[in-house]
Image (tube, rainbow, N blue to C red; front, side, top):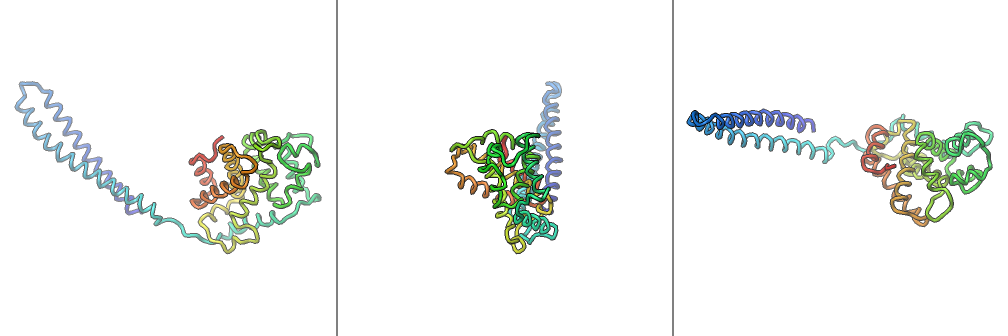
Length: 295
């Protein structure tokens, strides 16, 4: 690809030089034509000479531009073919460490005696329901889309990973989270239970990233590099949650469509990861560029 790019640069320079000469010849011809009848003979001769230059220069310029476009096309074609496209690989030690931590959170049961676990509930309450009045159990948890008055009962299937994901989303994307909570409040056919979906989003990513039973250790992929970032999972979680919400709104979905919406969300995230190379922020930028994260 570098060879094509360098060739394109050289052709661009050549085309630019030729077109400058062509423009100069054109300007001389115009000046001669304006010299008046007293210099008609000179103007005619100069215009004839200029015409030749214009013709030759124009042809040469067009050829140069054509060569430039050809070189650019070669570079683009090379990139499209994927000459520099990385091969799927196993996760690096750094990525494996983060994935192992996710697996640990997935399999860790909520422990009331663990202040870090109970702290997650307090953080979630403060970020979504207000800075005071924390209670467990409480009917207010249902306002957040949990089925039970004790959210821990709804989070069992995702260990503490689902709660960690929901807390990260609520703290780092507060406007989106509050909007979603407000729009999905109430149990109707046109709303989805936010708290329950939050736990399911974690399980969706666990499946995509082969976290369960540490399947990632034998799974090759092109996106493992981004998982070296400790926050990568939670940024992808937030991306998936927002994508699901946007798809739900755009399609005017009902609860009967939930499986279809989850499937579409999974396909979207997998498609973005198939193009992922460096940092998770690039995945977010890609999603934004595709119009997947509208307000």
